[in-house]
Image (cartoon, rainbow, N blue to C red):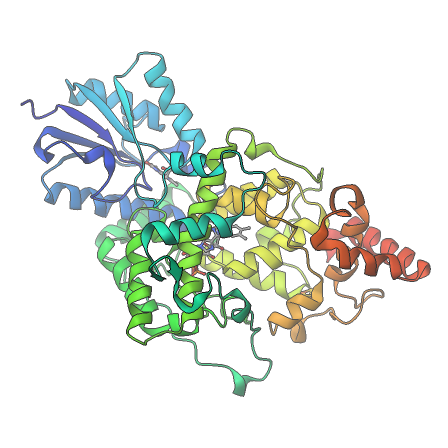
Length: 517
Ligand code: FAD
Ligand code: DLZ
Ligand code: SF4
């Protein structure tokens, strides 16, 4: 058999030895192409750490593939002949490394990349064949089958299907503990008094090796304007180190994961979160293995059920569900704007220069680490964008660039569906809108803020408060009949007319001066 029977393009988020495009052929019969290209750097305003993570993990994975017996052709960003696009590099490799009988690619995570590569197939330029991405627990077809005929697509029901399918936290056909969901136990805020706070372990840090150092230097030279802080860089870039991050989480954080899942703490974005999304999303960790590790910790008495179920639900439930939603509604989902929000993204999303302590904190962590935890993304930056009516496409572009774990299949449903309700309720049953009171309850941010969550009017009033009521006022047709918002609309109706008018006037003033907040 010809050494070069199959050409496989391995993308920067497909860094697994179990990739479907590598299956069914001996390594010696397979040439793997990996390419660092400008087009992938430039499609979003990428954080410098995200670029470093992807390139260093790609370079380490290329070595791992070579060790496993594959011939790997690796095109670096600064290679002179690099065409700087994935289709360009695939076509060039086919001509220069062949002959090949076939080109095989595992389905990319993003519609954009799939379209660009599929054009090579439909035009007859390359004998390209797609393989299903089986690094997920449910295939796109599984989701389509589940979604067919349903009036509403809700995560909870999809999650239960996957619990049954995988047997995770199941006793026969019943959920362990007699309940599917322990979310009600997972809503504790960050204690206001330091003495009441649990000790948070330091996040697992990896010292960069020579390969990572070379990538950091490349990013500094080739992408000097990339958003965010590049050094120090301490993320894992190999499957072995990602595994260590997971183990560290299970041993030191999982037990408190549930209780403090929604809490926000000044100066600490890591809290009891796992910090593994970036590794799951590029193939360094396997989702089922992560869930099983947590389940084992539960059975060994190392973590309570609310923590373990909560963690498993994020991966088995939310992660799989949002991926299903993405492919179900693409193309088109990238352009939704059900609430007709048009305001541009304020500059403080990039600079962090705002008097709103919660926002400054979330952006600071985002700039420094390319990370903010879920509630910061949803209830601070996302909630503000929702209440202020920021344009969903601008907001989505920001999220896609600034987080090290961001890929469109997971970012877009979370932004336009969960945070902004721009899909009109295809993903969530109601908008996650909240006033400053919620942020105050869950965090210790407000104490150090210029504004106070206790006021709605006046110069010191928390901007979230008037914007919250005004958001409801602006969308009576879309939201007024939503049964989950009935109580809050009734409170609005009961508000004294003068207060209601003053709140609207305050919101108008805030919206006119967003950049100054
Ligand atoms: P943990 O809190 O420890 O959760 C464990 C794991 O569960 C995560 O690693 C992740 O794989 C999964 N998970 C949790 N929540 C979600 C969710 N809502 N959707 C999908 N998976 C989830 N996640 C991304 O992976 N990439 C994104 O680009 C992304 N963008 C987001 C944008 C917004 C507006 C919001 C509200 C959420 C977004 N999320 C995204 C989901 C979630 O915030 C991150 O997965 C999480 O913060 C990553 O940190 P962690 O690994 O410490 O997660
Ligand atoms: C995110 C990213 C970046 C920044 N660069 C590359 C790259 O140079 N080469 C590559 O193969 N992949 C890269 N990626 C990941 C791709 O954008 C990812 O494969 C698509 O988002 C599809 O999910
Ligand atoms: Fe954020 Fe308002 Fe609290 Fe300030 S007072 S930290 S703006 S919620």
